[in-house]
Length: 335
Image (cartoon, rainbow, N blue to C red; front, side):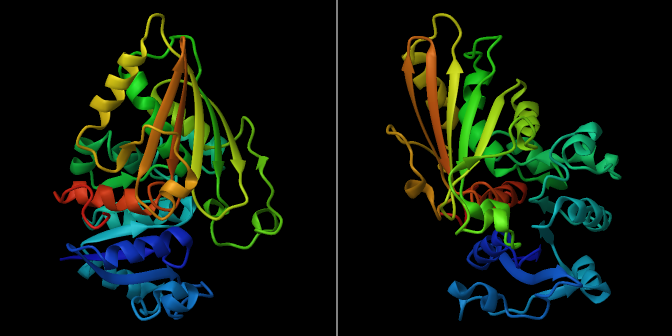
C-alpha cells in the first residue's frame, strides 16, 4: 500500500480524491492537508463533506512544519489539489525529496514561460520542473506519465476537448487550415468551493464567459498541436462538462474513416466510452468516464464529449495517472 497524501483536501476536487484514495486497493490515505492558515484546519473532513460521515472522518491537518516533515519522511506520493501559485511553490519541495507529485492545478501543464505570464499572471520560478512535467492526459500520454516524477493533470475543459479531437488530429483528418470550434458548458463546481456571487447557484444562468481569454484555450491548442476557437459557458447545474465541437474534415474523409479512427484510438481504454448516441451530463455525472459520439454530414463533423469535471476532469484522471505511474491497471479503484 502506498502512503498517499492529498494537499487541498477541503475543496471539491480534493474531496473526490480522498474518496477515490480511500477505496483504492493499492493506496492508503495517509493524510488530508490544507494550508496552515486555512479556516478548515483541524476540522473533520466529513463535517465539510457530510456524504462521507462514518467513512472519511479524518481531520484536515495544517500543512505546517510538522506536516511537511511527516510528508517528506513517510509519504510515497503527493496529490496537489491546490491553486496554481501554491502548487508551483509546493511541488518542487516534494520533488526534491524524490516524491512523485500529481498536480491538479495549471502550474505545470504547458512548457512555455510566457503562457503563465499571459494567462495565470505570474512568472514561473521553476522552469526546470516545468520542462520535466508530463501532461497527464491518461489515454494519450501513458509512457511519459510512467516515466515522470511530476505529472500535470489536465484541466477539465481540455480533457473533454482533447479526448474528442486528438484521434482526428493524429490521423490527419482535420482540414489543414481549419480551427476546430469548441462550445462547452460546465457546472458550477468547476469554479471551486470558494464563495463568489458570480458562481453562487442562485445567481448562475446559462451564460458564456472568458471569450478569447480563457486559459484553457491555449492549453488545448498546445497539446493538440493545432489552434482552436474555444468558448466556455457556465451552466446552472452542479457537475459535468458537455463540449460540442465543430470540425471541418479534410477532403474525401468518409464516415467509415472517422468511425475507424475513434475505435482504434480508444480500443482497450475503458474510461473512454464511444456511446453511439449523443452524450449527456446525466450519463457521466459522478463517473470517471469520457463519453464520445459524433455525426458527419459531408465534410463537416460534430463531436460531442461529456465528462464529470471533478472526476475525469480532475480527481479520477489523477488516479488514472497514479495507476499508470505505479504499474496498476489504469482503471484500478475507479470502476
